[in-house]
Length: 103
Image 1 (cartoon, rainbow, N blue to C red):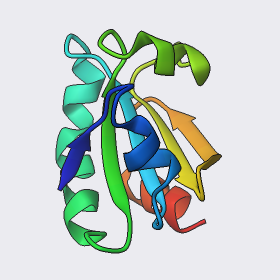
Image 2 (cartoon, helix red, strand yellow; image 1 turned 90 degrees about the vertical axis):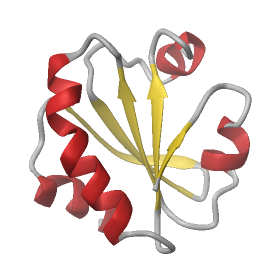
Image 3 (cartoon, rainbow, N blue to C red; image 1 turned 30 degrees about the vertical axis):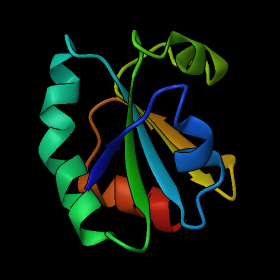
Image 4 (cartoon, helix red, strand yellow; image 1 turned 90 degrees about the horizontal axis):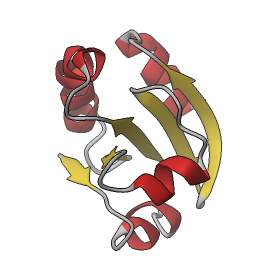
């Protein structure tokens, strides 16, 4: 299950998560983000209980997008123990995202 994250629930869902977190920074108007939706859904389902998959809309949460210098959408960031450990932008294959998450 994907979790929609805003500045309000970001500390709880991402920074204090006991499992790795894959965060997708996206925009509602972004065609490439729409192309990634099925892959992100699959990862959320396959990693249920072992990792979280969160989405942050960059205009709704501009402060978070700026904090991580997100200039391209989609941008994916993997967090472990509250720290960003891996990131990539653009249309990515499922293998790339799972490697990032397991890395």
